[in-house]
Image (cartoon, helix red, strand yellow):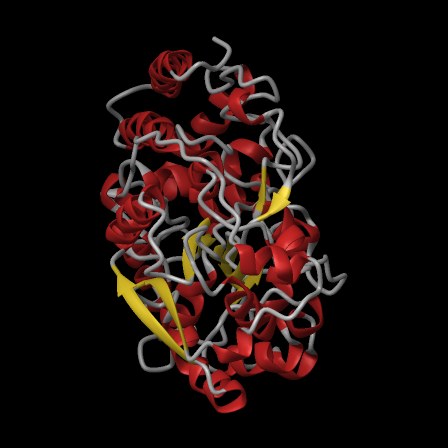
Length: 439
């Protein structure tokens, strides 16, 4: 499950650095021996929490098979980002691998902070792994708007997903069939709303929480933060309609105090039988909603991709955690071998047994795993649907602060949907213009 610090965290620094490739990595790219088998230890900078828990449980197997110890050095979410930035600036060799939240890729890609996995270490795309998983670890981004300073750069793969987060939808399947559209969601919210039972749960806390909760609705209604030319779209008619749908129509049937709800409160409301439906991340499912020691509704909740909106699409949001190799690591080939080991099907199955969230289609669609992992089918379908990622700019921290603050005000009833989006759009235009983007 995503940690609260992650949801509230924003960084606005913009630091650039020169790309660097180690000599051993160049040898690996040429197919020559690098002495990787002489490495005795790899050090991983990891986020502390549910995201790295399964990783800690499988690294012992890697040592048993290779003789190489994998040391996990944990940091809270915000501290990890800061530590990685200072490490990359100094071209420090302290870490051979790093866990990265996918919205950090624009920052680290712009800095030239990572070693390319494709050209240096021979990584190629596996058809059993969704295309979008490779795309989210590629810089510059292979589709969508590209930051002005990055448009002339060659695309390379810099990160591989090890936590396959995509935002999905959950509902009480003991009460109704699955909603096909957001109109169905609204109808069900009205039908099942009752005293002490919320027809819909809004994750409305300011900045990242409400941003994450609302963006799939915004996209499904045809709205967006930017168009492909970095023109701000939040004050467009489609965007305002989406915000009105969430903060006025659905809010009628939502929990009291929705402007203060985060993911922990949302999943607790579902798990304790106080709510009918909401969006959800895989970590909330495994950690709370389907945990028999916590949940009163285990077996009564079903999971589906984000419902369709007026755009004709239902678009979930990527929240992947990736592994990358810092440019300063002196053990690049061995670090790359560890990533390849993590991706092997048998190793990923063991990772799943330890609570990991997989990315292989064959595992997500394995019927023998469905009972223990009831969200796998929905996650596979969500990957197939082509989930969106947050805009690929190193200004995203500032952008999300403006958008998430305005959205929170709309959820709280302090601003109308139109006023909220006009406020956010104005602030974001100023931010992007100041960073050299088209105004």
